[in-house]
Structure formats: C-alpha cells, structure tokens
Image (tube, rainbow over all chains, first blue to last red; front, side, top):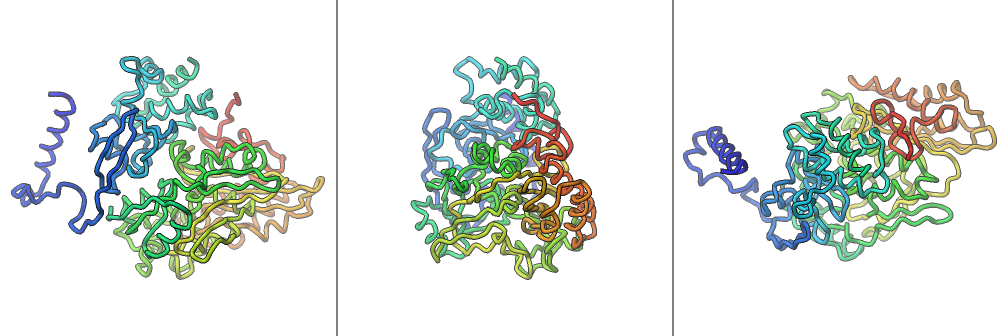
Length: 196
Length: 350
C-alpha cells in the first residue's frame, strides 16, 4: 500500500465514521461532487498543456486548475491548502511565471504552458531549487514545499528578483506560508540556488 | 459555486454586447479576486466572458503620459521603466500589494475593480447591503476595525482594498472604457462611488462597460505610496497614503494626497492639498496638513485608531516625498512603501 493509498483509505474511513447515520445507511444518496441538483453548466472540452504534454479533458467551467490537476489528472504534487489564494501551496508556473492554481479556472489556463512540481526535474536530475531545499532541510511536514519550490524556482528566472538579499527573498516569498516555520532554511536554500 | 456559462471574448465589442444583454453576466480577466468570490458564493454570475485574451495588454510610453492596457498584469506595470521612473507611487502601491503570484495574474483594470474585504461581505450568513441589497449591514454594529472613516452611509461602512487605486487617484489617472453607449473617459477619482443607499454599486461603470486602459497623465513631480498593515507583507492596508508633489523652487506648487483604507474609494484630501500649495515644506506644515486631512473623520466603534495612524502616515509620506526624510527603501519598491516589519527594512540594492 502506497502512502497515498493509505492516506486516501484512512480519510475515507474517517469520513464514513463522521457521516450522519441517515447518509451512511444510504450511500447512494451522497452526491458525487459538491455540485447542486439544479446545476446546468455544460461540460466543456478543455486542452491543457502541462509539463510539455497535452491533456484533453471534459470539465465543468467552474473547475479550478488546481482541481483539474489533482482530481482529473492525478498530478497531486500541487497542494490544496486554503483554496482561496492565501497560502501559496498550489503555486504552479503559467508561461514561466508563478501563479496560483486555486484562483485559475482550468478553462482559462488553455493555451498557456503549465508547469507543476512534477515537471520541474529533468528526468532523474533535480531542479537546482529542489536540490537546494533538500540540502538545507528546507521543510518539515512538506505540505507547502511544492508551492515553495515552484515560487522559488520562478524567482530564479525573474530578472527583478533573481539575486535578492534575504530581505528581498522574504518579501518575494511572502505569498507562501509554512505552518512548520521552516523559513530560515527556505531562505538559505533559495540564496544558495541563486548563487549557483 | 453556482453554475455559469463561459465564453471567450473574440473582440472588445463582442464582449461588451455579450455581457450587456445578460443582467448577471460578468467580465473576467486575471480572476484573482473574482474566482475567490465565485467559490464563496458571493458572486453568482450566469455568464463569464473571458476578456484576458483581448489585445489590451500593451503599456505605451507617450511623451505626455503612460497608457496602461487593461490586461497588463500588475507585475508588468510595476516594473515598466517609465512607470518606475516617473510614477514610482504606482510601482510602490503595486509591489506592496498581494503576492508575486497574484501580481503575475491580476490585471490593471481588475485591480481597482476588486470588491471590499469587509469580512461580512464574504460571510453569506451575515446581512450585507453590498452583497444583498436591503439585507442590512452587519459591520455597523459588528466588529468594524478595518472599516471606513469617510463617506460611509447608514447602509455600508466598507472600505476599498486596492493599493493601486490610491496611487492612481493621487496622480489623477484617467480610465478609458468601451461600453454599450460607446467609448468614454472617466476621471479615476470619479470611478468609485460612495455607498449612499446603493452600496452594491462599487463604481460608475455601466453594466457591460469594459475598461480598455488606465492612463497616467504627464507629471513632472515626485510621487510616493506608504502603507500600514497588520503583517509585514501580503496584507491589505489598514491605512495608506499616496502623495504626488510638484515643486516650484523651494515651495510646493501643487500637492495631491489620496488616503486608502478609509473609504469606499480612494479619499482625496482636497482641502489639505490647498493648505500646502505655496509653502516651503516643513514638518510643522505637514503636521497641520495631516490634522486637517482627518478633521472630518467619523470613526466607528473599533476604528478610531486609524485617525492618529492616518495622520502620522500623511506626515511621513509628505516628509519622504519632499525629501525631508529618506525613503525606507529604494523608490518604486515594496520597501519604500512599507511601514514597519520585515518588509520595511532597507533592501540592499544589487
């Protein structure tokens, strides 16, 4: 059993325990999604260019890019933290710039080059920012880490911020929260990757 | 999220026609504020017309001003050389706002059109005249520490959250639009409305009216934006101040001051501006001006702290803009714009 399978199974069991008995007795009554009964939005054919591959999906226009990545394409490296643009855990690159997948409708991400944490390494060779995060132990629980690395990797390409002081890096990274407070190591990792 | 139809606009006129004919249709571009409100159920359009692909992204440096295309991102505008050099208050306001990711997504037309951050506006369990006209205002008798000092009504005490809007108001920017009635130009200071009895209407834009550009007029003076917030970075202003100062030798020829975080629109302190014209800059003069700027403030139960905070902010912004006191960081950066905390430390230029 992989860690993901285990986590999913555990969460599903916990959810069942938490359900009111009336729903537990009639699981077919549980809606398959959060969509309401009078939903009328038609599914749209959507083409997304993710990590250099084209994906063709049929999606409700309400679908956020974050949910398309995780739920439809099973690219679960991009994390859902707050889902409201406040934590940065869902940071991806759109046309090379950092962006929030939770505040991007998938239908509006068409025609853009989307890069997720799964697309950052070149085969088995880690991106320099990934290697620097490992070297500097720049994470504890790891949940915010894909977003931190994607935001930090974009800074390397950003001509306005690529050789920043620690203060400038903190300002540029303020959209990525780390509840474990691994910030000093994150700053050290980014500074090393910027020097390389 | 309520269901909606999605259309990609093929031209400005097609987008205007598509939104104009459906009362609850909306334009969408960067989406950073709107997608959040869709998720919250606060915004429930039946049709979204995506204007992000329209050719409105160009920033053009004219001899007598800068035209910023509606779809230029906040990042693109903040680092545009002519804006950094001639209108640093705009760059400072943009870079002291939101995060890198959001600035990369948010557009220059969308930023001033973001809705209030009044917590009751976003809470469907609470009454809110801005969200549901006639339902009441939970903020007036509630926790109103982030709410308005000026221009509020018995229907609404919300403030406008945009930093950019405050800088644009001080610089007397103009908004170019196209709409069902054709194109027009709106003075930026006229774009946002006071709540009155219709707080659900944030701006004077007609339904289906699309911003095509924001124009910065010629300006030969100094400008600066200064912001106080609860966190050092990535937080809305509790109070902010934009100053545009033109000198005539040692004397102030013209000063323009816009206050943020204190009203449903950037609040121009026009009577204070008149006090400064013709005088040599001194701290004493600026203190008198700041006192005048807040003379008509009407605090609510929890926001009276904004009056001394705002006065001190105006004094500091004027001292820094006039050169009597150094900026806290390089002009045109978040460090120049931030009061206190990590972001307020001087960044070492590279």
